[in-house]
Image 1 (tube, rainbow, N blue to C red):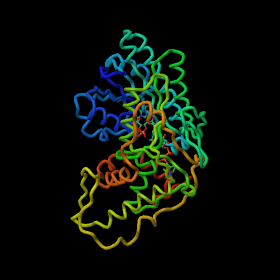
Image 2: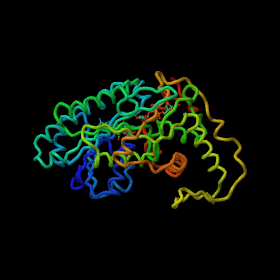
Image 3: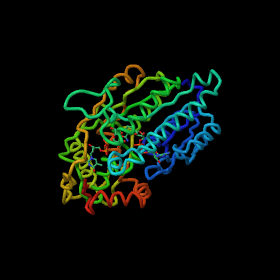
Image 4: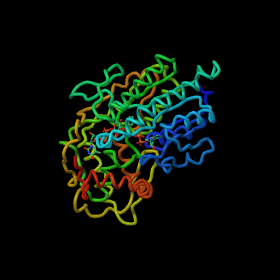
Length: 385
Ligand code: NAD
Ligand code: DAU
C-alpha cells in the first residue's frame, strides 16, 4: 500500500491491540479509520481515548459474522485497506466454550475475506493494485517449543488450544484467498502483547488488579511457562509498517525478543507494586517525562506484607503450551521495524497505568466479566481448572 491510500477499515478496533492501532493511526498518519467492532465484553470505546473524537475516526458497531452488513460497510466507506483484528482472543475462554471462537475467528474471517474479494474485484486497476488485506494473527498457531529454538515464518502449524486452532484456520483461509483468488493479503503472527487498556483476564492486568486488591496471584502449574512479551504500541507500529511495506502473500512474525517465565513476570509486577506502595499519602505523584515514569512523594514505612506473598500455584491450564519464542528477523531486516520499549520500562508504565485508571477498570468489569471471574476464580482470586 502506498501513502496515497487513506481509508483503512479496522476490525476489532475497540479491543486491546485494535484500539492501540487506532490511536497510533490517528496520531501518526492522516488516514481515515473505519472502526468495525461488535463491542463484545472485550471491546470498549473508552479505550480509544482522544482518537474517538477525531473527525478521521468513524465507528461502526457491526458483527463480522453479519455478511450483508459487511458488504454495506465496504460500499459506504470504500476502504483502501483492511486490517483484521476482531477475534475472540482469550485461551482460557476457548477451553471453557469454543463455539464463539469458531464463529468469530473462522466464519467471521471467511465473511470478511469474501466481502473484501467481491469489493476488490470491482475496483479499478490502480485501486486494485494498491488494496491490502492485513490479517492479524498469533504465534500460538505454531504450537509449543521445548527449551530451545524459535518460531520462524516457515515453522509448520501445530495449534494446541481451541483458540490457536481457530486462528490457524483463519490464517489458512487468508492464505488460500491469496493463492486462489489473488487477493493481496498480508499475515502477521505476533507474540504476547501487554500494555495499557488490556482486558483484565490476561496474565499481566489480572495480576496487577489482583495484587492491588490483595487477592491471590494464581500461577498455572509451576509458573515455568515462557512467553515472549511485546509492548502493544510496538505491535501497532509493526502492523502499520507491514501494511505500508509488506509484500502481498507474505507472512511476518513479530516479537519482542523478550522471553520470560510467568513467575518472572509476576515477580516483576510485585516488585514494582511494592516499590510504589512505599510512596504513600497525599504526596504520591506519578508523572511521565522523557526518561519514563517518575514517582515522587513521601516515603513511608516499609510495607507490612510484600505483594510477592500473594503468589499462589494453581492447577495448570489444560494443554498449556510450554514456551513461545519468535524469530523476527524478517520484519526487522526486510521492513526495518524494531521495538522501542524494553520490558522493564513497558511493564512499569503498564502497572502505573492500571493504578491511575480505576474508572476504565470499573467500566470494563461488566456483569458478563464478573460472571467469568466468579466461575473461574474463587473469592480470593485463585483460578480453578
Ligand atoms: P481483544 O479481545 O482485546 O479484542 C477483540 C476485539 O474484537 C474486541 O473489541 C471485540 O469487541 C471485537 N470482536 C470480537 N468478536 C467480534 C465480532 N464477531 N465482530 C466484530 N468485532 C468483534 O483482543 P486483542 O488482544 O486486542 O487481539 C486482537 C487480535 O490480535 C486478535 O485477532 C488476536 O488473535 C491477535 N493477537 C493478540 C495477541 C495478544 O497478546 N493479545 C497477540 C498476537 C495476536
Ligand atoms: O502468544 C500470543 C497470544 O498471547 C495471543 O494470541 C492471545 O490472544 C493472548 O491471550 C496470549 O495468550 P496466552 O495464553 O499466552 O496469554 P494469557 O495472558 O492468558 O497467559 C499468559 C501466560 O500466563 C500463560 O502461560 C498462562 C499463564 N496464566 C494466565 C492466567 C490468565 C497464569 O499462570 N495464570 C492466569 O491466571
